[in-house]
Structures are given as structure tokens and as C-alpha cells.
Length: 125
Image (cartoon, rainbow, N blue to C red; front, top):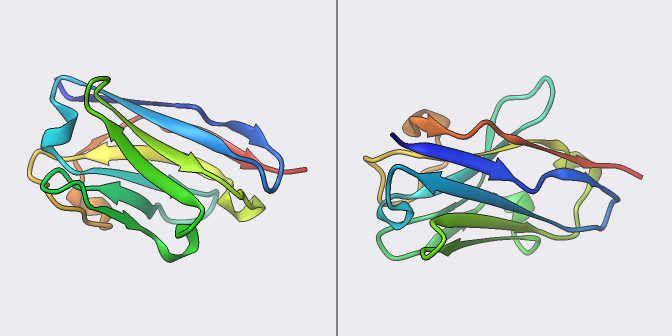
């Protein structure tokens, strides 16, 4: 059974950092692309970052480039999202997602069938 569990969210001041974790079970994480998404209140879920399984290439939404870094620890079957220079507009619930059909990244929410429960990130002074 495919399961994803996010952790690491919390309250942080503007300019601060957080590292989110996405622990996978029921499958080998590096077989599939893993995406991070976020959803703020009243807004649609949007793509944040992704790491492919085919060659480990990464993708970042424009507003996250230079601030966020996605990585994968195959030994721990976990994907991380390091978030630096956080801004109030980064406040959202962050989700990781995957799908057995995906080897390369896609930012389209509908391409992912398996989702974690989400972790809240709040950036506020």
C-alpha cells in the first residue's frame, strides 16, 4: 500500500527556514517522480517542486527558485524540501505526491494519484 507522510511544518518568521520531509512506504521512492505541492486558504493547489526518478532532475516553480531545494535520501526512502528565505506568501499546507505512472516530473495536480495528509507551514512575525 502506497503511503506518504509529510512532517516538518510549523510557524516560522519571515526570512526563516524549514525542512519538510516526505516519508514513503509501500514502494521504493526512487522508482517514481515525487512532487511537492501547496495549497493556501481560498486558493488552488499549486506545484512547488519535483524530483524525477529517471535521472534525478529537479523542477521548481518560479517563485521558489533559489529559495527551495528538493532532495532524496534513498536509504531512508524520504524526499526533503529545504525552504529558505520564507515569505508570508509561502504560508500554506504542503503536500507530497506521487504516482506509479510517473518517472519524470509534472506540475499538474491531476497527474498524481497518491498524496500525503499535508503539513502546515505558517510564515508570520
